[in-house]
Image (cartoon, rainbow, N blue to C red; front, side, top):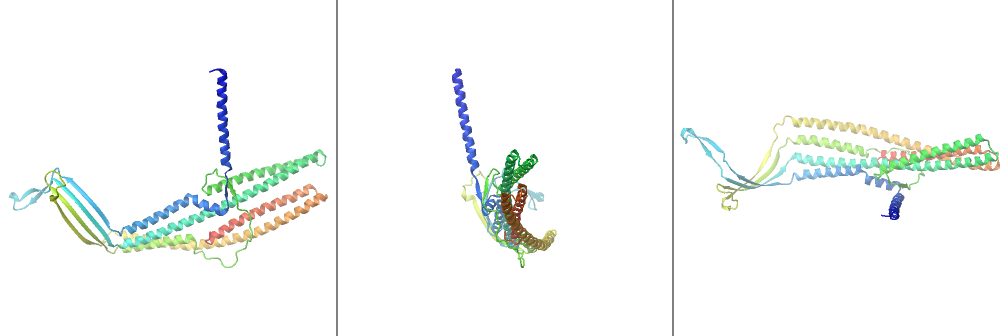
Length: 450
């Protein structure tokens, strides 16, 4: 290969690699542009659909329902077919003692060389009190798993909603920080011109620069917090961490009203429903142990055909096959089990007492949670109204001071102080909106409506 052709080959290869690299970058950029837009309701729905906790709990419900079907199958006929083929290479000898043998005893060999048995047997439960109680117990366990599924969804709804509002707050804070930085940078740029014209001292410009650096640091911190909050939300939604989100729900509150009057009843809370179902399960297990002293009744039957052949193995010799069959009913009565049932009765009685104690404690805890949620919500509404009034007032003061600055009545430093007050009141206002929404979520959960 000549030097010219060698360089030509290198050039073409480099061009191909560059083209592939360009296409890869373009494809990655295209993928990056795909943004998922979600409001709060869509986020909750997506999270409940994706989260493994929900999927696993749904499987637990299905497993409990399958246990119900397994118990029901015990009342269906149990039918078994058996085929036994045996070749006796050496028959067992039996010793028989009798006066008909010289010496009073002898040996006798019983059996045939070939032995074939085909049988069909069936049993049917007629009365089994344990099965009757097991059906109730498995049904109650299914109810527990269904309640646990609902509780899982409630907990995830709360977690996803909190993460969504937190991300909204961080996004708004970045917008505020960006505006503050732009303002500080504008003051700094204007100060440089004023310094050249002798309008300010170098120390004044240094203050502008310090304000700019502080605003830049706050902006970078808020951007980092925003990124972390979005990653947390993506994780709460069960999505790949590289997923980009655009939140369409506004961080705004209106028509906020305090909670007055009587508080709602907490008896519909899912935690109480789970504990009540657990109590029923232990009470039914106790009843099952008592019922196990009652006799069980079942029917049974059998049909058998067999071939005994002392010559070569030949199952087709139908003349050697003979049949027998029977049916009957059986009553089983437990007499003594080493006090196992009594020990089980004591265990389930104690567990039921624990459930009753848990119910008393749960009712007290949930009532406290409800009252705390009401107080937190009302406090957040007070803070929201106060922060909103302060923010509106600060904006009006800023408009007045801007007009006074144009008239020369105040200095730029005075206006900066007013702008600082506006920024603080805006931050407090955003935080009050966030705190209100979080308190509202807790209130909805506390009254069992989340």
